[in-house]
Structures are given as structure tokens and as C-alpha cells.
Image 1 (cartoon, rainbow, N blue to C red):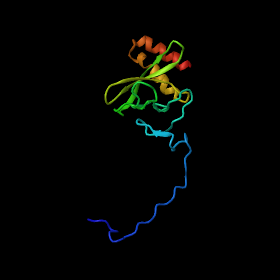
Image 2 (image 1 turned 30 degrees about the vertical axis):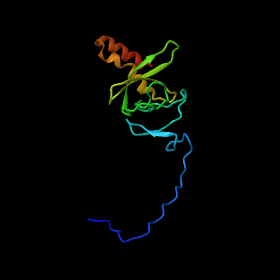
Image 3 (image 1 turned 30 degrees about the horizontal axis):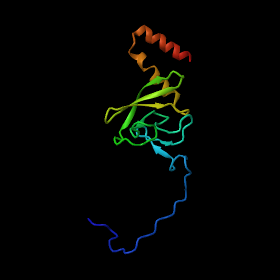
Image 4 (image 1 turned 135 degrees about the vertical axis):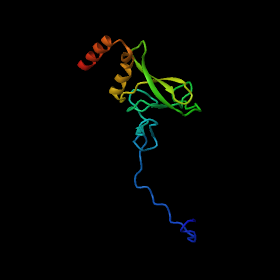
Length: 144
């Protein structure tokens, strides 16, 4: 079945946009949609110069090759947060693995990252520990 308005020669002009988003505002040019939870994420992050993961679910995209912010990777696959790693200066970083190519990446933690998701990653190795040790760890976390 063909289009209904086949004989209509002129097209209606597009309506102008009534909402313009500023740079860095949610929904604007300085934001992206998370590959994991599909929420809109602002590109500006406190504590880092390049936003590279979702602060809610900690999912990232495989866009950087060697240097943070270079956006030179061809994979573009979703990267799942595996664990946390600490540096000697006390800074914590996220370890991501690409679901498409299996590549590993380390990203700085931003100031607005979900604290519960970070703690969940930190205690994940304790889940496989002997039952007595896991119970002690759960009790310590409950007191926090």
C-alpha cells in the first residue's frame, strides 16, 4: 500500500525548536545516553576532565584507545565495570571490560558516581570468600 499523501506537492515546513539546550546540560550537545541503563548523562563530571562512564550504573563505551579523551577506538562496544583499583596516591579507578572485543580499560572515578554501585564493586571479591569471612565483612559494611 502506498503513501496516503502521494499527490500532495508541497510539504509542511518543520516547526522551530522551542527548547534549546546549553552545553553540558542534560539533553544538550554535551551529554550522551548510557549504553547500560539508557539514562541521559551530562558530559561534565566533577573530578575528571573526560566523562567516560555513567555515574548511575558505571557502564562505559569503548571509545578511547590509549589516551583518555582521544576517542580513537573503533570498537564502540559497551564496557561493564569489573572492579576497583587503587593507586599509590589514594585515587580509585574503575576497571572496565569491553563486551564486544574483551579489551580492558581503567577509568578515573568521578565525583558524582553512585556510591552504592562503587561499594558493590569493592565488596564483590568478598562474595566468593569463606562463609565466616563474608559474614564478618557484611557486618562491617552494615555498620557503615
